[in-house]
Amino acid sequence: MNIVVTGGAGFIGSNFVYYLLNNRPSDKVICFDKLTYAGNLETLEPAQSNKNFKFIRGDIANRQDVETLFENEKPDVIVNFAAESHVDRSIEEPELFLKTNIIGTSILLDACKKFGIKRFHQVSTDEVYGDLPLDRPDLFFTEESPLKPSSPYSASKTSADLLAMTNWRSSKVPVTISRCSNNYGPYHHPEKLIPLVITRALNDKSIPVYGTGLNVRDWLYVEDHCSAIDLIIRDGKAGEIYNVGGHNERANIEVVETILHILGKPESLIEYVTDRKGHDLRYAIDPHKIETELGWKPKTKFEEGINKTVSWYLENKDWWQKIISGEYQNYYQKMYGNR
Ligand code: NAD
Ligand code: DAU
Image (cartoon, rainbow, N blue to C red; front, side, top):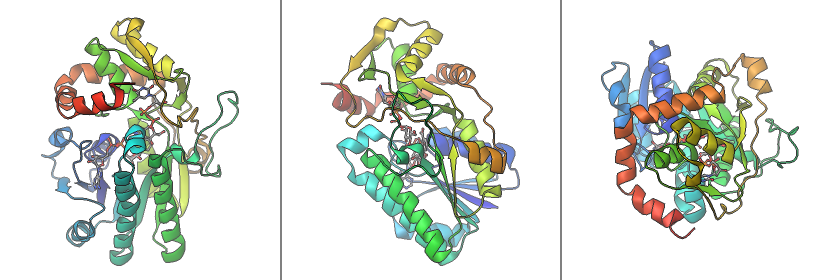
């Protein structure tokens, strides 16, 4: 199969590229990426010599780029990771989120209609369901939970999901959607909590914890997310939504303390800062459907995954030091300077 991975130079997309190259040697993998601040060709360096891999620079929100991609590569499957992905940035500047996440997805769906496709897979997020209260550990997001996004990012992802489902209903574009919880692992951009903590702690810098630190996220090692998507594009049913998560809920402060402990750094680095606006309290996925219908099971528990992740950042300092030395410094100052 010819599989186009949009956003394959980012965190999860690049891990998915490697997952396919390692596990599906008869597939051709075409990464289509705009290379925004979050895309990094160095991440894909080891893939460039693989005869099954090709990189194309392009924008999913540019119709010409997308139609040329379909004409030249004749994809069987599109897996759409391409997105603006950071909640904090979306609260400050929503417009690009609407353009890439909504218009971009719509343009990809139009091309699927025009040129034909065996499967369009939309990589969505548990954030479309909004949040759960902290005092009801019995509640989980199912595929039937109401859509109640809290940020411009999650509103744009919800819109993309609705566009995907309406294209299935009205034009029979064979779409599937996965809604996954928080990922962590190699190649995660240092603007996000786990790599931010690791990279700042290694530089003995303060660790900004929003609000009380008690907000809960449901962490999934990135390779487990990749195996779920791989299964959905092959065995999942068109028109279906699959929640993906592994029951690894942790309060943010626990995550921060765990990382500091692994690195042997003091908790005095922790600095409580002003909360994120509209900060979602708790995410928790019920993965019953993908487990029972497709036989998916995550392999990596949080304790193992976080140790592997910290080791990766220790062994790949060049990768993240380049990222945090450039424009990222201005970003950090703007977001955290007066917090
Ligand atoms: P990321 O920000 O690390 O990577 C996004 C990639 O998309 C980058 O390579 C960027 O260059 C590319 N991109 C951005 N705009 C583009 C455009 N207009 N055209 C083509 N490429 C473009 O994001 P991530 O954390 O890897 O997330 C990937 C996807 O998974 C997103 O759709 C996100 O909503 C979803 N998701 C993420 C998580 C998570 O915990 N990170 C969890 C669930 C779902
Ligand atoms: O749940 C899936 C989502 O997970 C994805 O859809 C998003 O693309 C991805 O970015 C992630 O969103 P979060 O907002 O949960 O991730 P983030 O790493 O930004 O924050 C995780 C938690 O840590 C959140 O409760 C906010 C908090 N936080 C974050 C940062 C960056 C802090 O306390 N301090 C920080 O500096």
